[in-house]
Length: 371
Image (tube, rainbow, N blue to C red; front, side, top):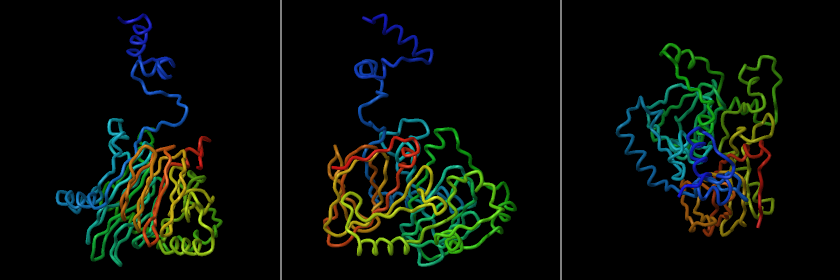
């Protein structure tokens, strides 16, 4: 029999109202609501893994049905199964805040210019020796395996492959977050003439951008573009991080320093203007884990995605069977899940990681727990 309280809660529900009673403990359980205040984080996402071999096969299958003109959309999204029924996030969320997926561009193909307010990075998994490129904010960057290229909000960018083999990258964006919050804008040139004018406005190469901003040097200019002023606390003037710089730093670090028991040998891709993360919403790292080494268990308030770049590793994750990962496999670990990583092989492992940790740090709720 329905109590008076039940009737009142039902009336409130129909009027778009609720009470804290239905979001705590037994009240939440009784009315089938998810608890709002929890002793420790209970993330919406779940631990999951995607095998690269399987995803790559599907990527090539879908390429049969998408024309070269549609190359911009020749992608495979990694969808976290726990998020599938959430509006917007469920269509492209590897975590509640992050997108993750693969994109294929074949020789002779080009993804045309466009821009959007979501930030975007691309970690290159496979590339021809020469000819693969992206143009971001007027800088044309030649892409090689292991490079990481990116763009900040609302700058024009295009991609192409003038090489002799396929180009495949892993793309990460904060698109689920931006769209969910109502801040997504997207634009493509309205005519071939407009696109050609954008293409003509080249400013240089990726090496030029790194020479200006990537050597602990910052130019003092009066005529910074308007978007730099608008995003002055988050704007990142670099357009790519060469793999050679990253691996050389890791090799030098591992030859001179004792390994951190929780992080291995880790470097962060930082913004040269403020020393902070790549974006205000996404941090990116490369981890080197030497042969026959294991990291100690840790918890972090972040939703993290790991892409194995080199080697074979094992993830030990709370509440989950061991996940054995090979090159380019993808693993997602939600907030506050305890995990550790092992490398039981006789060669080093390299792991690319990105997460939404900057969001939690900005909000003042980031935590770590070491065991």
